[in-house]
Image (tube, rainbow, N blue to C red; front, side):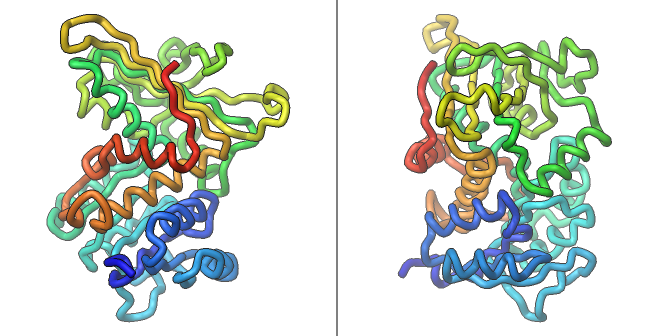
Length: 338
């Protein structure tokens, strides 16, 4: 037994969804004794997952109620929201309990209401924005690789997903929200933040791990803002391309790859281009869930130091980049210099 067994349960809202299942299983792998509550509308599905991972229960969630439909007196050690909660009742609930709140499904254009709610109660609870690419794992890997540069001038992150790796209903809803609400992605170009509108700014051609040329499109995730704040790189963008299933290698499943390019100078002033690849044979919800699990583990103080104090955080303010890269490799993600 360890300290995890003495904590109140971690509540996953949307915990039986595609990413939620991966997050629950990853956290169970990291912390076998930590009690979990899997919140969902479909309690039967959530109950099956609870039985599978052990030391877990399923609860029905009602986002139309201030108490989320939970029994009176319910207490948790953290609340992880893996779907879009337009009401922010989940955040208020976490603030009332004074426990860490993880917001997973917010794009860069979504966070205004959460920032405002935090500003009104800045000491109520730790709030973590985790609407980053693959649960923050890519941003942290990028910062890990950037440590060999004294100054970073440009960051280009490119990803190739299989066309059949589209995620679950929550992911599809997010994509629809982007398409209808804010079609312009955020990039940083020549030192300025830009909501890209021209085809030249929205699209970019890049090379995959095996040298294949892909046409990618920028996406409005929080990585651009976070990486700019840490590195002050003048040019930052994140692009996605879809790989037709017909172009998979023989025997290859719907895995994905991420190429991280960093331009800058070393400590001696030498110009340098650093290029790394993350290759994962799982669907992208796997790494997303692992990122959420690593964040919860750290917020609760179960690794890396004391529990995180109230405040507003991005992944790099909570997690150590080298630790995350090491964990991903242990889980089977292949990381190598290109």
